[in-house]
Length: 200
Image (tube, rainbow, N blue to C red):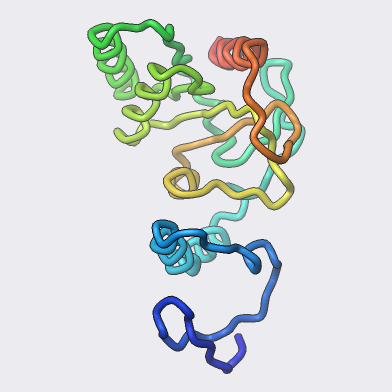
């Protein structure tokens, strides 16, 4: 770390300048103040995340060509979740009623208490609601995502902490792409089919 001090243009605080390992965030422009607090929190949390990544490097390294159920994935997180005997697919109709969704959540929480690992691409609002509840309850989850990983990809936010605890694995069956590409119905069906096969 350099000894030189820079002045933060937003707060006026003196902050040490660091030797740059990458230029990923060097040119980030804040277009409004609503993102400033998020960036402050992110930067404040950087040292903790670095320590966690150094203590558990395997949980944050992209694993290529992970084979399971005759399928191949790129993966981040706890690869041993796939070895658990009870894996449950979370799949809900888009037209699920609030009463049926509440029942589904209670059913999944009961299975979680029995040691289930929950597997889903979290496509429908119902699937997202169920996975949020089991995740918040601390049960392990395997999340199938459409977009693959870059070599230096790391999970962010709550996913980072979940991976550090060994609570989460993220699987990506396809290559990484830049930009937002709307997911197609065919890909949704394929992801749900993969979740089903993982849980067989």
